[in-house]
Image (cartoon, rainbow, N blue to C red; front, top):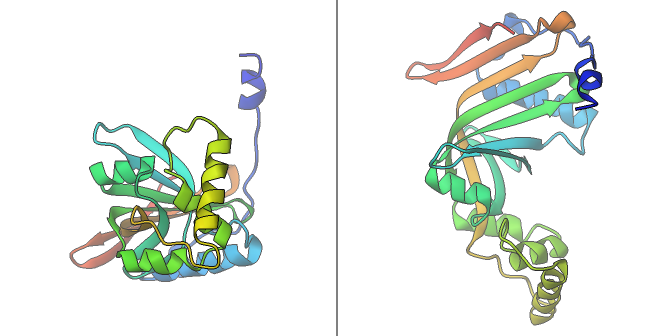
Length: 215
């Protein structure tokens, strides 16, 4: 390919302050909260964007960007159509990894664990907090499934809006939330000369264990 050499020659340097073990919190959720708040201050529009990596029963991987909608001691949550590719893959293999990349801070966080569906009531509550247009799009679309033309989708939205004029859009039973219960959380800080700082928390019977990883 004509641009291979040009791409391989691209470089960037990492100049952020280092990450030291004595600065790491005993609980990774507290560490994540610190980094999330810094990301929200630096880039509020993108701070909650995360890559969700799943795999189907045959092991084929898939990754896409979704938005974090909540996190606490129970896990990290997001919302989607259960009939989507990710929904089908999670039904076959309820293990996943989340990855945040905050470029301006030169930081990454990877979170691995098992995934479970949230109660329908939680999805319904969040669904009705969304703008009406987003509700209509979610209810009118069978996510990830083929459609003959965009006009078909637009017509569905119009018909659904008219059918519920002046009323709330019902939350579909096929739409709701997932929660990933973390078993491993890694914090990555870019450093000079690619000698990056990496710390990984692993959940054991004795609680969270922290170790430094080589870059």
